[in-house]
Length: 287
Ligand SMILES: [Zn+2]
Image 1: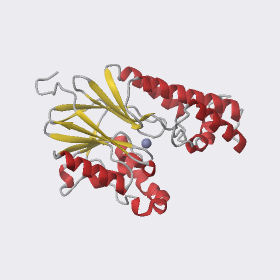
Image 2 (image 1 turned 90 degrees about the vertical axis):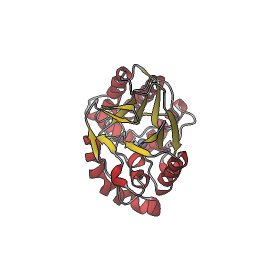
Image 3 (image 1 turned 60 degrees about the vertical axis):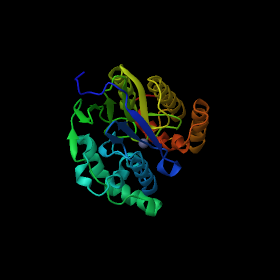
């Protein structure tokens, strides 16, 4: 540990979005002389309320770190920047910056008409690109990025570890807490691999902060794995080698997963992901 590295654990404020913001979390990391945001929420209202919270702490926003490129985590960057937007580093992996640029327009076309005034029509992209394991420093605190590649919810993912005395990590959508998971992006197997990888990577970390739900211990990684394996087992049984499920079987799947996670939000996602996972598993010959 270098002499200027802070030995204390920074104060972490959680901004929890409501249902319209897909229950996505953004975080504000507060150190002595400034703030760093992790992710930025989806909608106009959520991002403005996040900005209000940042302003109310009365310390400058020194940087924004992005975990992955999905709109519920990055769209709101636009509204966090204030009067001199170019002065704030927006830090992300190159793969995440690329993905953000490629999905801005299709997501706008898909969701703009649904969200209307709440959709953020012009995104602001990362202006500082980092590579796997690279560190950035704000107010003497070191932040290290880990590139974990495609998996689960997204084609590009990263984890940010705050290298304070007690390490904490921001894991994006590697882990969902309290909500059902979006598994419809053909990356179930990679997601499971990423959970394994993260277990090793985060060995010294005391607390993890997920993209959705409450922060907790490393056990959350095992719970997510258990959830995905149960989902995949249920699909293997109910799809029986076919790339899609009938509505009846989707209902059966939904009731099984609700038993596993009784108070989980976003239960529509269970059926929503079913055909994608059935296709992925059928293609992999798992039946
Ligand atoms: Zn998310």
